[in-house]
Picture 1 (spheres, rainbow, N blue to C red):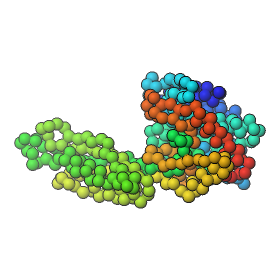
Picture 2: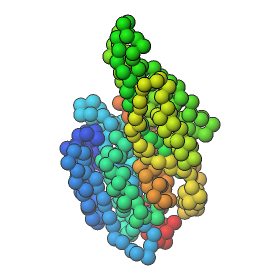
Picture 3: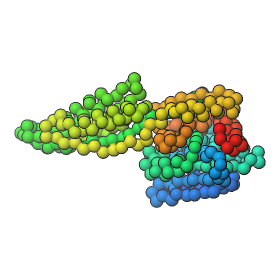
Picture 4: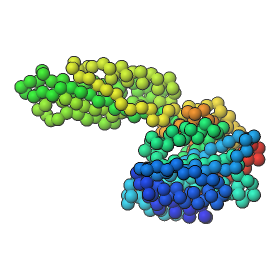
Length: 367
């Protein structure tokens, strides 16, 4: 199958987010393949990371517009996991499900459209280069482009039962920098302002913000501070993450964090907050559920859906008000590990699903 050969080609190129040359090499292959299908290619050049790729088809202003979204980068530095192999049921390698495999699904489905002598129109593709590191650069481009579209399909991996994704938690990463005052722990203990002690109080208050019944978590993943055992700590830092399922919880937690930062539990210490919401919540919307129902009617098959705690660039597009479904890629597991794999059978079913949907969309100018 040609598409598995294409998958092998891109998987064997290391595209660690910070490996600009590798990410761009993968992007150039997709440039070639989409040009063969008649797409125009726009490259948003970047100096330190891979360049983002935007592929546009013929535009019919009287029809709805569909954006297909993916990313080119993977998580392993060069020489760590650059191999590809397969057996009867699975393909193995970095990105086979997250998400070079998903990009190949979208590409092959469009190839199938071309074989039907159907002109591809109002279906465009955006492939960004920094999703695995948080999309700190590409999220601005994604937001700008997304506003042109009525629908978005994101080609992250499908669920175990080939579910699509209707909702994802929002996520934010933050740092609290705490300043105290150093003092000799033996001779001048009372002269010090213990930043480590302040950090310990703040950590406990942050964790109390977790509400599992609402899907809200606050995790202090890293704690640093101090100089040595004989010195009152003059500085400390907390690194933490928040995740939430609804905007009300986001607002509650952010407000509480500000209060925790402003309050000094240890007299003499001061604190500053850094960080931001990385990707806002993708809440399951009526529009997304309606689209799932339409897909089931178009394909005459059941389509399961789910919400996930992890984030993707679907969060960004959804936040722009675009009806968004994620999980159109193949099913796989072990992503972000050297055991990453994807099901060959799921490639077939996902390609056929996208082909059927693209055909309907082009012929009917909508879903």
